Length: 417
Image (cartoon, rainbow, N blue to C red; front, side, top):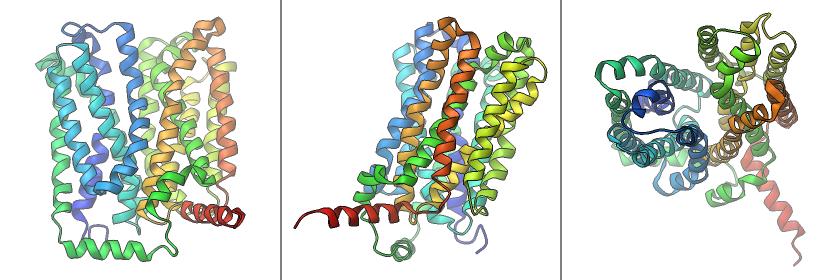
């Protein structure tokens, strides 16, 4: 089936939703000094705002699958986008830290819901193009992360920081329209789609059991741990990489900023290439191993020869992030239905983002404990062991629904009459 055939609204909706998922995260930090003139922000407040995205993403991931079951994926998308619009506007009009915090919390919770529902939406509307559409939305997601820092300061300088924060509400509103278009499709088309999905899974696991028992799946834990490792590294590096480069590798602040830009830019080819490769691989563990080796080699470079080729160490560390788009694709490749994809997506991201929130904090504590950056590098290398172990658990293709069915049968057979 052609990519656009009968699903134009869905494709546009997925693209625009992906574009909105990181704008609020990336738009704030470049203009903190300007905001501080009107809304006092001390180091504690900045720390709270810095930890808020992964914490909100983890909390959203816990409830999003249940909400999707209750109201439907498409309606949940519309609701989450509407909440994001309110959050963007609250941030723009905030006159106190409390209002800024509440607005940010609303946006990040809404974005967290979007993170969870994107994989099952791809599963529902593009089961024949999972790799291609995942590549597309992962790349668009990277655009949504890269553009706000570039335009935030010029916008704030020209029209004030409130416009610089609030303008992203317009982009969120645009994302509403294709999903409204999806919702107004005929009942017959939706009924036929549900019937096809129901027929795709023999002996279907009840959706309630999927959401409540997903933690019993070996595959779910493997994906969650891989996602946790890569998210731990990404959030830590965005928080600390410039300072690491200046103090550990002897780079100037300008060069450190350019290398952070290189790290961000490399996310584009990773997001494009990896999903297309994963759908063709017999043993996806090799992709996880590749990422783990990239992380280790990059950090070893910073330990033993930090100033020799910092750009090369950055490239190697970025190779480690192949785990992120790999997990996004595997959420769909290791589930049979959109219901299973939603349950798996919620579990993986809840565990992953909860652990990722600890990354910047632990690295900061190690740095303050007089270990310098060596302690931080050793911690980051140590976490890669988890990725190796979890990657080995993904060697054999298994569906979470099948694993949960086996668990249920084992439990029934072991229950005395």
